[in-house]
Length: 495
Image (cartoon, rainbow, N blue to C red; front, side, top):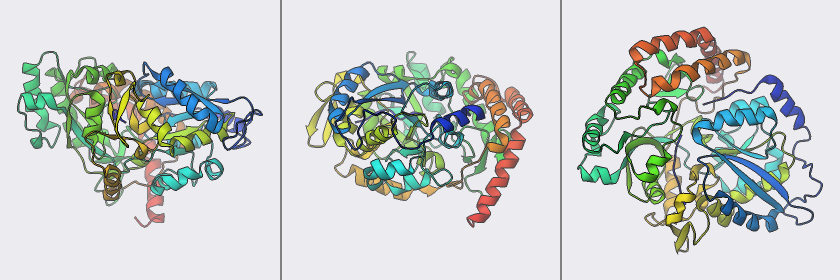
């Protein structure tokens, strides 16, 4: 059942967006004359092309063959599954969509292949009618907050995963090393408090990476971002909803100085600014700590996935952000020739436990074995099919891990109820008036973001340079436009 939780935005050109929108005319009617709706078996099966996020898996084709044997009799369709690793997903999908490469279903989110912006640019098909006709089971199954909270200008353009609703950041630790050196993780309450633990590992374990980090890392900061991983946000405790440039805040500067200190001490890989995945470290257990977004009983999930114990400590409160509501979604391409079948598949993925567990955990007897009616454990071959669970639909259909309590999914629902609304929950920034500025800011971000955020360069030297470049690219104009929209939204919603 489950797998690693890991962790930005993009713009399509207006002309390509218009082209996609025109191609999509006709809405939810399939153009494949051989296909029959609602699981009919007449005619040649439709092949659905699916792009999703995560490291490509060695046994993926083997699993997809079994998936196709299962779904073809049900919906007269088969699946061609393609995976793109986390660090490359946004850029590669941007190119594929802009070039018109054939596809039916694609992973999108607030943090990878930006959902709101691409919905507004015409990359995704509006799903309201398709959900009513072929996805009613989805609407009856998932928490209504996901569908309501992920609407863009009043419409759904993707099917959200039914998962944890709040986002809670945690520090994760390789428990074997915590126990070996009797390290007290209960004292960890900030990035600064990690230093004595990292120092112990560095001095005693030369083959271990003390802090496993990738190039899109950002420190935990008290902000709700206008666009994820862009330098404009409001404070979490804001009363006036003033948008700030985070590059000018003491919170960011202090955190970057600490990260730079860790980088120079050798706690972070010297190649971190170009590292898109640390999956090899997880598989080999050659890491001590990292940071992740958590969920109830995530330690059990990670431990089952990696094959050794992982423990965690909260790094933030459980906030409900736009990006957590939109944190994992499957969209149907605006130029899909098979939108009806694509929605039938998504309906099945989100409501059929057999399919959901096969896509998630692989083949019973090969990658996992059942140890109870609704409980499983991974087998050694699971390392060849280790999927990111959060990205694959309704997680509450997943089999329990060996250590999970029987009421795991009830605990999830209570966790969802405990979430604290972030200040900008429900606000979606319309970037149409600052499209060129955002493109320019993205170019600056490509140059400065990873080196700054990972400690590869000295923030005392490069933070001011980056800020100057961001401002020259139009950051202040974007902030002014965001402020204007937030003020209007705030007034309309009595914030």
